[in-house]
Length: 288
Image (cartoon, rainbow, N blue to C red; front, side, top):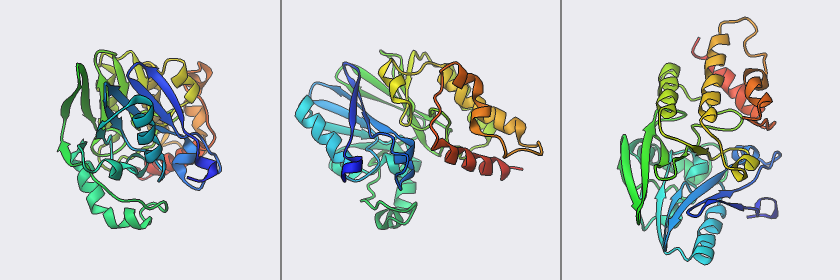
C-alpha cells in the first residue's frame, strides 16, 4: 500500500468484535476509498470470523497480520456478505480455509472472474477473484466456541446480501444494506417494495446495536447505531420513490431527503456521497 492508504484504524467494539477502518480519502481514485469503510472481525480464543476482506490489495494482508500478531489468531473463517469488490479483495489470503457466502455471491464472482483479475470490471485495482467455497441460501448459523453467529439473507442492496447477527450481543453487522449517510440503490434484482419490506423484517429483529461497512467512525466509537439507522435508510428510498413523479425530481440534494435524520445527529453527511445520490436518482428514473 502506498503512503496515502497505509492507514487502517482498529476499533474495539467489544471483547470479541473489531472494526478495521480504511479511512475516508475524498480525492482517491477508487470510490469506496472516497466513501470510507472497513471490515469486521469476530474472534474467540485462537479463531476468528472475518466479515469481508477489505477493499484494496494490501489491506487484507494488514488485517490478517494484525489478528495473528496482536490476538494470536490461527484459525480463520471468512464470511462474504456480498460479491462487491470492496468486500472480497483479500479472499485469496484465506483460500485454503472456509469462505462462506450466498450461492449468488459465488456465481457472480465466477462469472466476472476474468474482468476482476484484469481490473476491468469496475476499473482498478486488479486482484485474484476467489469466490466462497461454502454456500447457502436463506439462513446459516456458525459457532465460535460458545458464541453464535447467525447469517441472514436480505433482499437489500444486491442479490445474495447477508447480515451477521450475534444474538447474545443483539448486534447486527449490516455491511452495505445500511450506510451513513445514504445507501446505494440496486433495484434490478428486487423491487423497491420488496427491499422496503426487508427493512421491515430487519426492524422486527431483536437488535440493540448496528454496525455497517461504510459509516461514520465517531458513531462506531461511541457505541454504534440503533434501529433508527434502519428507519432512516428505508426513509431515504421511500422519499425518493414518493418524489419520483414530480417535475423537479433529480434536482434535490440527498440532504433534503434525510434532513430530519441529519438534524437529529442520526446520520452524518459526507460529501462524496453526492456521487451516490446522483446514481440513485438515475436508478429511480429507470423505473419510470
